[in-house]
Image (cartoon, rainbow, N blue to C red; front, side, top):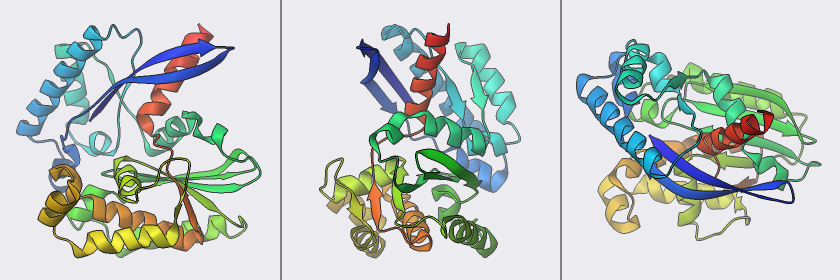
Length: 281
């Protein structure tokens, strides 16, 4: 769970989004849902407590507008709607449970594409706990997008069969065959951490070979070694390997050699959509 609070600075009609706070809570709803098909009582209470904390932080920061979205874990949970209603009752926060296509569209609202060349082809990969969103850009516009039920929590629990991997592989190969010199854009906490481990800084891209080298290094280490040697948080140390597997495989199938990591994601897209809505009013 993430709470992103931003200030918007308007100068010459070009908005700058200044991050004021980013609070991350390691509540793995998918750990319950992908196995038992519903959120457990213990995680339900942690979820509610987390949303109460977010509500207080929003009050302290004098937030003027907000949007809360839940993705794969909540949309697949048999008690997801019930819990969303309970959170509304206890905190006043309304949660929209969105599908994979809506998730991809909101992420695209993050204006990262403004910084990229309109003459190039890009494959955008967003890896979450329950799903991976793939979007293809060509000549500055979206040409295709799809959500796949391949995520870090599913992979950790051995819940992704060969057919799902084959579907992703065939879709990527088929959709990218006519997109030469394809460059990759990655988002999500895991690829941000991998990029940080590479010692590079944006906008310098990560090469495919460098990504694969980091993936191999992480794969050879135990979770404890990743925590102690690389100083990873406990809730990052296990999921970072399946996440890197998704990126390495997808880039291989797309024959992409370059990875950009602009540190954007769903929360950034939500903030920008809120701003656009405010302008519309």
